[in-house]
Length: 564
Image 1 (cartoon, rainbow, N blue to C red):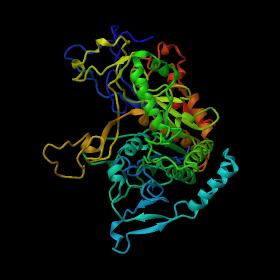
Image 2: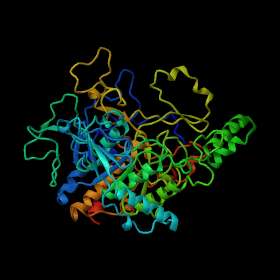
Image 3: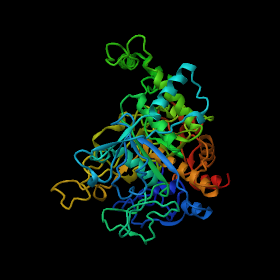
């Protein structure tokens, strides 16, 4: 049932910048006794309590099980900056690739000193040896199978470029940098006369010297879910180019990634459209909603390729869906070998975006929704059939006839008359995720360049000088679950060997079995609770409709992987 706002609220005792790691069981944290009721007048919401006492970690459990063999996480997103001190040694620069500026892949050369006016780029075969035969039957017709084989043959013989130019990911990689920090962020350290590296035996920086905390005052000891694994950045754009995403998944498979994460949807013009659900379409049949129904009909006409509204419509006789269909079958086929973690979407719909919507029990696609520290589904998070698990994130305000969720600490809250809403009110969470940010004006916080000694008057230096930002969404939630999948793979490797890898369905099975629906989102005190979002009495549905298998317990998942 909806929460009664008049009842006393048990609030989290303090905000800790790695609170999401405690919620997932990555680290043990003692927050002390939780007071009942909101803070009294003049009392800080943080209650003046110091940061929680940190005890054991799941990283210690894996370290005690055997040798450290990092997992490889392929992030298909807009790129990751290589300059961030919390990501410097986690990003696999020799494997990362840019598919937005060259069809067959591009990489930026580190050493600009070797460049001459006649030596600005060189050829490199990034897909050499590509072979998808181990994927087996992808469920394609004979014609489509031959079509895909021709694509694979072309890429296997292709040559991309290595450029000695300015790295574009230093400008346009804010979203990928945020996700990367949540997955593999590490405490930045300084080792004298040493470049960042990750030797096979582990250690954050490892040439034998004793590391010291970073002397950069803007850097904090930040941890991702698995700071001992490596990240492969596969940079893609938002263009509706199926070939670009085919190349991205082929490359992730070719690199033998242990986990693939797609923290956004794919712009498939057919499968990417989220159709209205029956309970929503019923409202459009009402007389009072006739104008909205007319608007919906015109929008739907455009999305379905109406000739007057779709200038890029395919010519007659072509099959524009062919590549997208092949991509779908390729994703499903790869997921049976490698877990693919996908964001559920941020539109508050009771259905998942594509390709998270492909998640079923017989494949390795893991769809991830978002929950708040208050125990509710994040106001924007998609949910419904096919949702695998949820993970902590921030919240979003909701104003509809089914619920009211307001940030009452906002200075604008008093300017609106919420009394016109007759819907029950749910608690709004002020907790968000803190993660690594792209420094400078192109970052989310638009912070000043941390390396600049002079900050212009009036400029916003950003959180930590531009290194960090608040983040959330199902993007942040899926990034954390990708980190847990990396922990599962790394635990399995520690008991076997560096080349050992669990399949997508195996990782998904372990993750689901280690998740619980009757759990609180630490440091909160309310168990996962359903809410009415898109239909009357929706909160009476099975709780899996909102949370899938529930909130993962990383420690239980690692123990299961060690026993596999």
